[in-house]
Image (cartoon, rainbow, N blue to C red; front, side, top):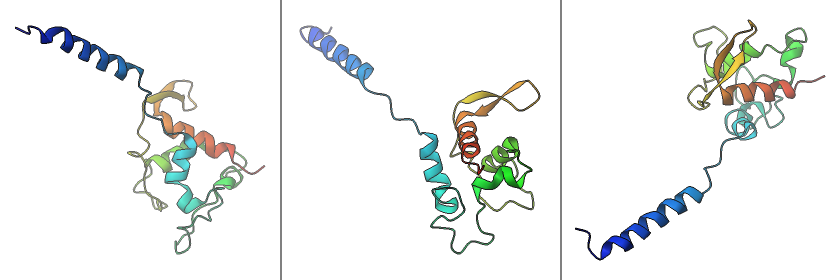
Length: 137
């Protein structure tokens, strides 16, 4: 028994649904946002290990622009993603926090080198791509 309020209620609901459908989606984090939030305080804006929080750290944060150089000219993508994500927890060289929860995102198919795509968090893959892009030549 909606009575006389029925048409007004219908219009209000329809208007609300239309406004919600037109609202912009929340902004997605970009790889630059992720680097600035999770990496730059220790590794610096340029990735050279000179971030504002690095002053009293022992060992000092790594120079991320020299990863490939330290690995014979090859960027060790899976090792880097493992270190960032936290797969290497428990290893003796674990000096940085894990970011698995922070970089949680829908999985993207990623070829780990065996020709079979495996699901990896999309933001983790993008961050590894970014780190590879800043390697010193």
